[in-house]
Image (cartoon, rainbow over all chains, first blue to last red; front, top):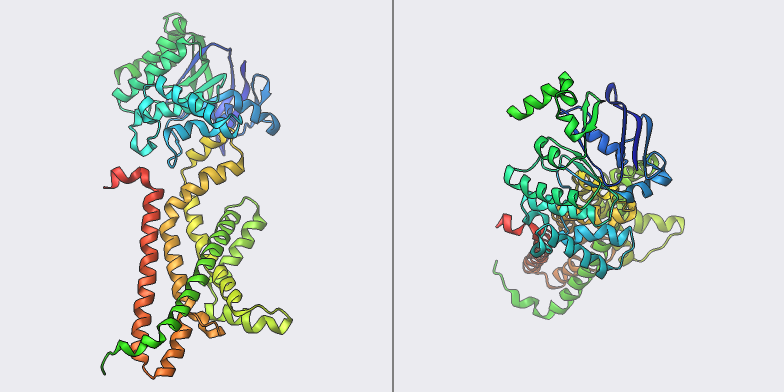
Length: 244
Length: 223
């Protein structure tokens, strides 16, 4: 279980997360919606330990990310996919994927490579294993980014606006992969602006507003008039996003 | 004045010996200065205040003292306090220390230019600091710093001519001897000009190839 308990985070005088509670059970897909600056990405960055909490507690399968000794274990259990891919530019797609399994999980190189190739094949990049990031399109890079996270066999996949830097065609390439992962039962925390897609794949939808978790509801309920839409701020957000 | 290079033929072997010595000193100093430069660059980007200050002090000190003064200090100054080092070793050490100060600048710039997101990706995947540095930070930094490092190396070859002032008869030292033996400084120094130019040209050619190799993934876009 991934548990966020009363987490507070401020950058200087600006409060970004103001007492957030969230639980993600294995097998669930939880989408986090909210306007820019609502704290969505910061929440992901707190979960994977890139930001230090000011208060509260985050545990990944009972490993506390605030404790340096437990952070390593927590990080083994979660994999992050970034908005801007953050691939290692000097390594091929395959090397990007196999580096951590070999160095962190101490997997034999041949085994890690075989698995890396099979992951690449699953995302339709079987023939691009030896390409460098600069030789790939944005959508292809992000698919490599997803493989890199999956190669560590994480129990939780953290996705931080993974399609925001992509054009619509490339976005659908990436979303197709995520839909497949969701169907296979991969646990995901999915920060996104793709509302319709979130609706299709999520079990639950969470709405963040100015660092406060306003709504946390099962997907159907979130889009129902007497559920999430009863919240004026959510209704306003959804209608605005759909207009755009 | 007529240019008559044939008078140098009997001295070619002697000059070649000097050129070889220059090459040896520069090759060793290249290795020394790049290793030193890396260590100092790491130290300068270190989170420990003390280590980074010490590294900055080293770089500032050796960049702000004329090389010939550093060299004289090592060769003529240190024996006064009982430290004797032969001319060749002194030359290599002095070139490495001076070159290391400049090399560290080039490497540090490469390290600072790395996109923070890449380091975050390495961090969340659980890679240790050591692996992150050797497998990610250094290779990416070298991609951008190999050209400035090349300038440092070329400068080092040019600076190595100063080693003749501490009795080390490298190329320039031998040339001076030939010039005074033959009374034909014009011919001798014409040859010297050409040899140094050829040497540095070869080095810059090598650097270009290395740069291309390190950035091979970008070739399609560049060409």
